[in-house]
Image 1: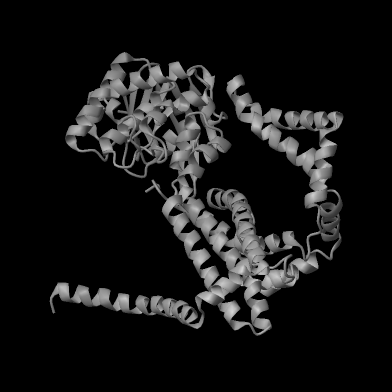
Image 2 (image 1 turned 180 degrees about the horizontal axis):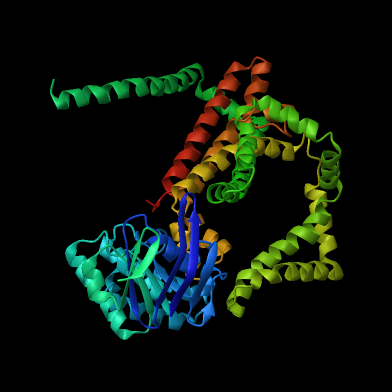
Length: 212
Length: 332
């Protein structure tokens, strides 16, 4: 479960007050709203990248409000993929596992598993430079899922993709939703994506969050 | 007027303006070349004093570049990624070596080493350098060397806590076994020296100016790298320190090469602070820039020009090497 309880965020003149939402365990939540309404800020707050001025964030049974990003166990895919320019695709998928000191054979197996699922096995030795938008988003998704997080945050991962590529990644996300192993909060502007993927849908408008 | 014609004239005018400067640089080098002969070059290269100056120049510039990067990378990162009270004051302080006349830097260094802390440092390097190396530098290096091994063995992230303990154990072992005393004696005998008017003064004078340029370069480099990748790394389990070492620093490779090259080149051309703080003693603190001054001061214009051209060759060679190999497979 992803639970926000009266969360308040400030950044310069921007403020978001008393926002509450719940995405039940294993469900796929979609968060919609106009540009600049604070969707990305909420996602960053859940990931631990933005401090709260009030409220509480609970993941599962754990209050993570004061935990560091790494201790929250959340996979995060930003809008621009933010791939590591000096690393190969394979290293992206292995990065979080190596940080956790996993055995080399286990890391290799997980990299192969993810590469097959995301259809990026042929890209494993490539660096991000030259990858298409769709390929970059697949790598970012694989990197976020590599350490088997229970929670996944997606910040408009499909906004810069063409129709065909978007369709194939929506299929991947749909498969993820059906597996029900990860609780997802996905920020998007697309009504079609929301209708296809959302178990629960939220609308953020003028600082007010409603269940759509 | 067609668009193609207008574009052509625009680029031609840009080329003309920039080209004038390129021609000026080349003309100076050609004028130097015309004034000297291969015999002058040969004679300059045969001179023991000039050979010593070449060696000291290369070593001191390299050490200055390494020290500058060592300081500039963390400082540039700090200035780029964090906001703290007094940051603008700190930035102004870091610009002082850039705006001050180099001679003033040398004079300030000289005055600094007349103060109590400066005299203490002089006395320490002259009499206790061996002790510091044996019981501080060696244990710290040993701990840093053991750290990755320990990390792999323990599969944990908290191994940094063991660093002081390892350093302490190594220091005690060195002391008990007597190896520390031997290291201290050898280091003291070979490298124990005062600072002012000695080789360390050359490096310190070069470093004082060059590092400011390296810091500025690294600051701009980190400004141009999005912090988003480091944020993602944090969510994947990195600490801030790991995000810096594993993500930010490799992505800043181009900037590191530029900062190192700039510091090196700046150190090569440094003259004023070296003259004041290290002196221009032949076979001791003479670097190529001071050689030109010394040869000119005794009226040997040919030797001065030969050494100047040597500096041009060395500088161009190193810059080309750095740009060719340092950025090979560079990051977009």
